[in-house]
Length: 324
Ligand code: UT7
Image 1 (spheres, rainbow, N blue to C red):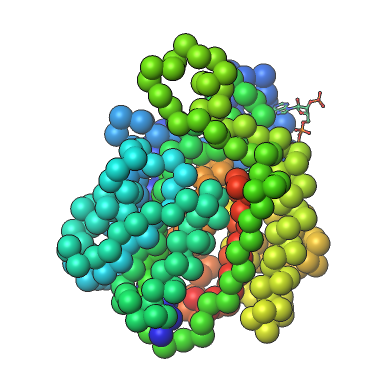
Image 2 (image 1 turned 30 degrees about the vertical axis):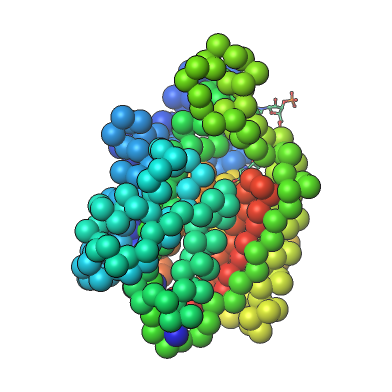
């Protein structure tokens, strides 16, 4: 048995922040952001209402509705998030409540930064392949705006908030082929080392490290080197060629990274759908949200062959081949 995606859903916060809006708070411009990243706007949560769990819950409800099933049929929820609202309960447990899943449903979170949704998806596949679950929610949800330094023009222009979810159902089919890679050694170009602590608000060094710290050029170099390589490796492992693939569904971080990947692999850029113009980088929410958009606009069709790939803090980078 393998897990087929039978439903997709996503949620983006109501508030939209354009590049021009950002140019009023940091020294930047629409022209610079568009040229260097492709991003035009991003959605930023109302932190009192649109928490990570709230967005995850709505994305999951929408995915369940899209699948045409009931929340009580779900027997496993795996949620990916780097930015949960609380330490306990897990995001997955809050989704259980939001969708009306029963106590027979297992719930847990994974954190592998931007590739988190792929890690959660592969975990779900393993449960299904082992016969331990039949209908699974795989959620990616982030409130990155809580961890962004809004005075740092090098990072604050990149990120947005949101959530995405897929429903997997056990059925016969071609197994997903995957590769997961990580490097603590190379991780110092992207990190966030301190959790927020209310009694340390006056400790400047501590506060600095409650924000994402990033050496943008190093992360860029890592991405344009490793993403094409892992895609090549996963195609080889699956025994398929790039021509066989309908879409390469990549983490939505930067249009230049996606363009460089397409170029290195000598694949038509038209096979690399993008939503980052509208959303910015939503970390683990980016791939399921993009797939949901592709489904809504008719790009995604049953039986298509897809490669999903992502990269992020840790460092971590994953890729998978699947038949949709
Ligand atoms: O999920 C993974 C998350 N991280 C990423 O995906 C990050 C990957 N890296 C990138 O996307 C790019 O490195 C950035 C978009 C972050 C930066 O683009 P870049 O082409 O690598 O620019 P840079 O960092 O080399 O900076 C070029 C110049 C610098 O000025 P000087 O030193 O040449 O005078 C920066 O200070 O651009 C300046 N700069 C900006 N200017 C206007 C940096 N950020 C901005 C900004 N607006 N927002």
